[in-house]
Length: 187
Image (cartoon, rainbow, N blue to C red; front, side, top):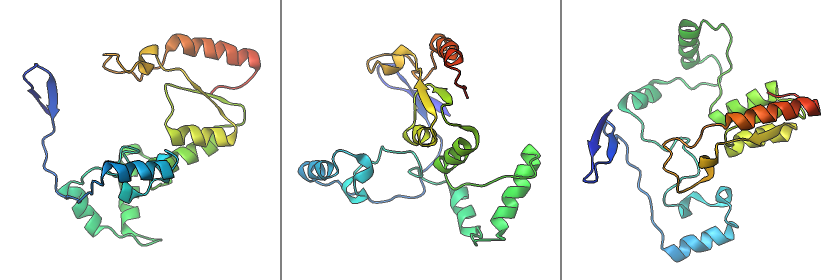
């Protein structure tokens, strides 16, 4: 990745690729978008895709695919059972990680669900810097307790901190001591 600079000397990363797929989007008039947002109760999960100009709800599947990804998709065998794609994945995972068994999942939130169901128990405290909605949901529905302990600058929208997602280690230490007193478990 190379960097270019604007006239104010701000460095901007320049990704070295071309976009191969373009999808037309529709910008509805602002009054129609506002009406749709009101009808959805300002709940982004209840909006219809046709009413959204730029989807910033998720980063799942909203990026352009490379020519190699598209080519692999065209060659993929997506049969329900016994697919060649599965065996290619199995071979590569064994080659890289030496894992005999694995459970493929279609998306990160499905993986979160499996991990939470496997490791989180009722009243278990799970510290994190700041939740992603599905992550917190998977933990809470099982009975886990999410404790968000992001650094103070993480909540300051005017902060110039280059990474505001750090966990506050002092808060973490305090949380661990508190959890021990309550006789809960920490994950």
